[in-house]
Amino acid sequence: MEIKQTINNSAGLNTSTEKKADTAPTVSLEKDSATEKGSATQNTGELSTVTVTDSALKLQQIEKTLAEIPSFNAEKVERIKQALSEGSYIINTDRIADKLIDFEQNLF
Image (cartoon, helix red, strand yellow):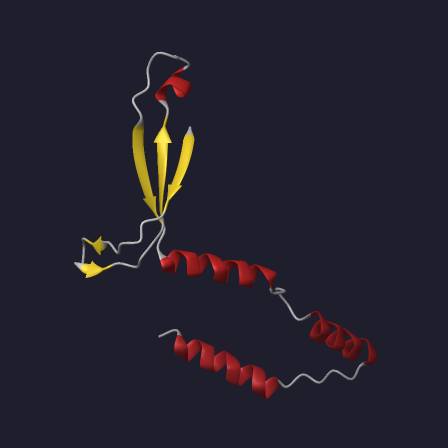
């Protein structure tokens, strides 16, 4: 399969809302039937187009940035471990209860 990338500088229309869509690069995929079917005599040159909007590109960048952020604060975990091992970690039960109540109330 041969992949050709072309840039579509014109903005398209979102047909469901009739609003102007983001300007987006267009990737054209040309399917070579001869290669896929193993026959050197048949080539229909079927063409498919994929459009990637600016919003999708921004989402990709956000995903990449989020993937680089650690999933937890290792320094904070280490401080809590240290406090627990020393017996100096204080559990604020009133704060925990308030947070549980707030969470429960926000469910409805």
